[in-house]
Image (cartoon, rainbow, N blue to C red):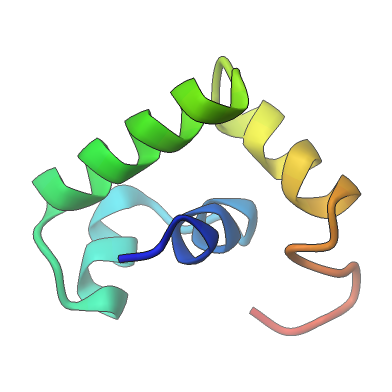
Length: 65
């Protein structure tokens, strides 16, 4: 699982179980990666992650999930 995949999935509104199923990893793996991502980017929560993803071009408005 790559950090950009995790960030993009969070920004598209997927839950941890949905991300795990989509990427074929365990939910624990998703939680670990998202926690690490938040720490590295100094994000407090998923809402900040969504804003970061849009502001930095990880996802674009109007593109399908």
